[in-house]
Length: 197
Image 1 (cartoon, helix red, strand yellow):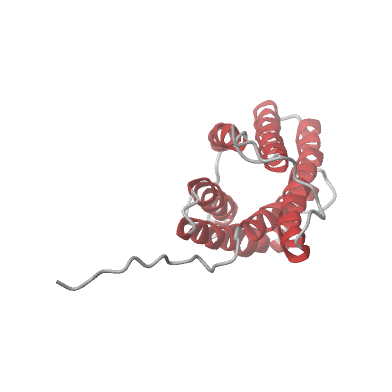
Image 2: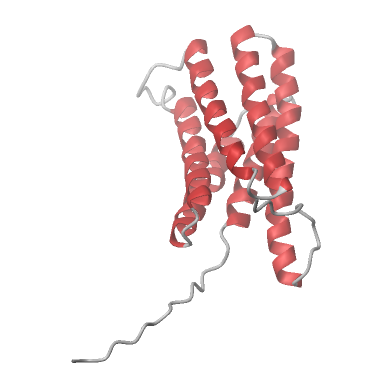
């Protein structure tokens, strides 16, 4: 009989969460600068939606899967494909591939993402305060966008833009906290206690 030895394989991959959070946050800020009325919806926002908000988050989610982090996998991969699908909603009609989404279609689209985000928010209650704020403010953002589209009130859409800038900034803060706290080996940017109860 050949003796067997148990070998523990150590995960040497970096933490993908800061990448995913920064990709989400920066893209969210740029889109909501448009929603707040400061810039037009241009290729700058669409490119960010495809490459950083979209692909970078999907990559972060795949790495989270390797780290056995179901929450990170679900959140980053889902929101990465959210950005890709949102760009698709805007670009596909321009290419003649489909009819533009109606107002009621956009209300349904944003509503389902808002419900999904609200469900993920409950997962953050076992994580830290910074992530709780990100997901709570994102839930509010989707609610405001739905309200704005359903009512046709441009003022609500502008309000959503300002709230979205705050949401995006909170994600960037949380992502940068992950980077700087690891680099310095101490708390540079606090994210609140981890709730393990």
